[in-house]
Amino acid sequence: MRLLALVVCVATSSPLALAGESALPLLRPGDSFWTTQAPSVFRARFSTSEGDFVVEVHRELAPVGVDRFYNLIRGGFYDESRFFRVRTGYIVQFGIAGDPAVSAVWKDRQIDDDQVRWSNTRGAFAFAMTGPDTRTTQIYINLVDNTHLDEQGFAPLGEVIEGMDVIDRLYAGYGEEAGGGMRLGKQGSMFEGGNDHLDTAYPLLSKLIDANIE
Image 1 (cartoon, helix red, strand yellow):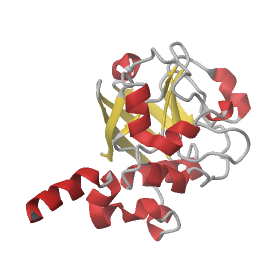
Image 2: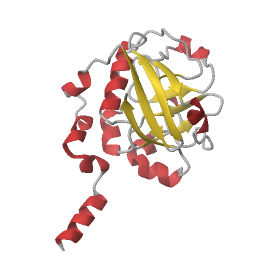
Image 3: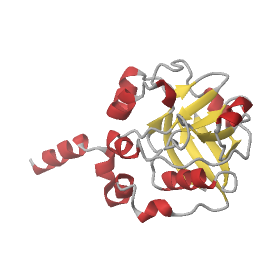
Image 4: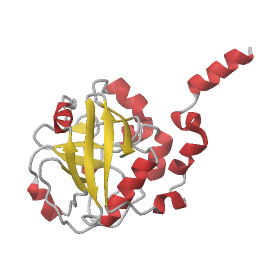
């Protein structure tokens, strides 16, 4: 009976609970863990259901955004999430945690803007936002040159240096339907239901398995 109880407990626990102590910073955004300054240049590898891609990040381009991005990767925020917005000929977007307990904590943790020091060309990536000083956790990658985003204040953190072919393969069949961008105001179901909602309603979405600093 004790073995059965253990199996039931594991089956019904959230990924956060199963992760134990190491996951706790994700629920404590005020922890000193999140104040670590990023290196001047670093690379991160993202493993997806379509293969891996690697980004190179330069802190001098957008220091506020780069520090947030670096620590989110360190904390495992992007692990086991979904590429919920893929618009052919425009962008790929991700960055809502798969666990609703985590996404609820970070949904309104906004950071100040950075100046735009690099253009939104193909492969460049930046934080999504709804206006001044509203960046949180969501990231988009440019599938084409979107230089018109420069004058709107979207400040790239770096660029994809390996695996753009992987990004081009991410499932694009749902377009804006799975929740769309932050400005559309239709992301509530993703925040409330996390991966369970997306995997049920939009089962073909490509998966972000994990992200690691190299």
